[in-house]
Image: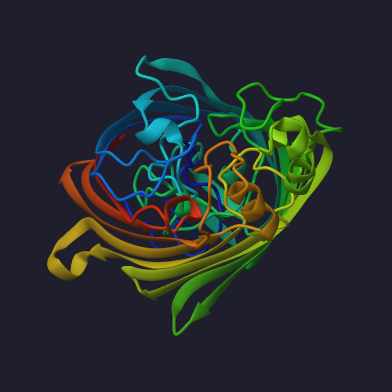
Length: 442
């Protein structure tokens, strides 16, 4: 559902697959006036039948299923003036999700969109401007990449990004778990699970962010448009009434000569959202079934997340995230997760003479607020989950993958996910999902 490209940051962190880096000690690189990068990704998934005591409106189907997603993107960049860059990303997608994209907190394919369908759809994914004001300090080399022009930047600078893009292009980055096209596929691993960041049904928004880089520190803040309706495609253009705000502090460090990063993020959303408690109170007026769509009103949602990553060796690293939101109102733009912890490790294949291969394994544990649990137990449903009943248990996920470099700039990935208590329900599952991914980038 959500796409990410490497962004301009001061980092040495291992990219899990062919990604660019920014290095404070790299040799100077020639400044690009423009660039063009392209990617294509196909993901096929299959799950066998699994045990389910009952199923509801938004349940993962207990019978065997297959699904697929396909995307192709052009990332076009132009250095339009001194310090100013323009980017345009046209994108084409198609796909058929498992169970109509319902029945899980942590969905299994980060390339699946809420607007997925078997017919190809071409649209503009990104159209934004980036302005950089250099403030001095050591120089850092930026390599050419999608939505990133090669050149030299000061380690002390101010960067403003404004336009149409994904919020997680800028916030909650990770070298090891952020891009479903090359890394882990589960939604819980591409960003903080409880980070209900502003986005349309394709994962993009309009807004602006400012970043202040000072040596090993980065402070960034931004405001972006919310969808006009919960998990819808049209955006609410009144960004001063309905919006998603976030602020993040990032620090780069070195432990035992190996680099790492720590990020702390807080967010606050304002939109017309339905409260779980209000829906429960209204249930007698709706045949005893609570429905958040009947009780929507102006509300705010707040949350936070902590994100850490650390190289253990030049070709191996670990990562962890923990996130929480208040869980009082419906999921508005991301996934139905209100508490989440995840951790994992990624290694490249240099040790077995496969330098461009990568292997990763991660564990996730997702949870819901007490209000959301009561709502689902009473028969309510949200954008993605609702079995009609609920025997609550946290949703637990294990994901492992091996990515083989099969040709220049092309990879084949085998991926396996096992999900216990799908949609937080111990009366259903566990379920296993096997995936094959083909990815090429130029």
